[in-house]
Amino acid sequence: MKKIAIFLSLVIFLAACGGGQMTPPNQPTTIKKTSSSPEDDMLAQGKGIGEVKSVELGTPLDQARVGRGKSIYDMKCSACHKLTAERVVGPGWLGLTKTRKPEWIMNMITNVEVMLEKDPEAQKLLELCLTRMPNQNVSIGDARDVLEFMRQVDGEK
Image (tube, rainbow, N blue to C red):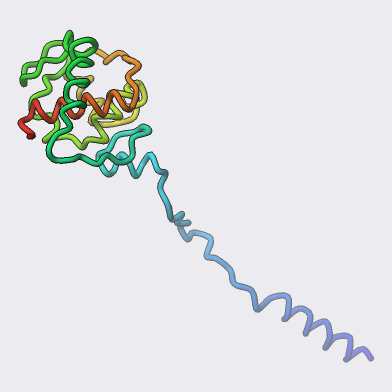
């Protein structure tokens, strides 16, 4: 009986010591980031941050939008932005539609505070101009009209 008890104790001891996987104590832990946020994706694509995720541009230009965009420019934008490359308070608009994605332009117009806070390109403009663009409370539809006007300024037909 004593031999059986010793044998069972040995079996239990061996069973408790083996079988499980152990991680080496100094092994670095790697956390894989499997997905990024929609905001990160927009920034990575050069679209800025905001409600405007996609813009379809037509050819020829929508002249009704161009006219409305010019009116909005005259009323809300012309004091700080010229239609040339000249920087006044803000950067000149000439060539802007060639260097920025339409979504970025519309998000900058409609979501300026967040763009200046989080978008690296908007932050570069702030460093260059040293003046924060004020929120003009432009709707997305009005921003699309301004974009169409900018396209005309850049020679789109």
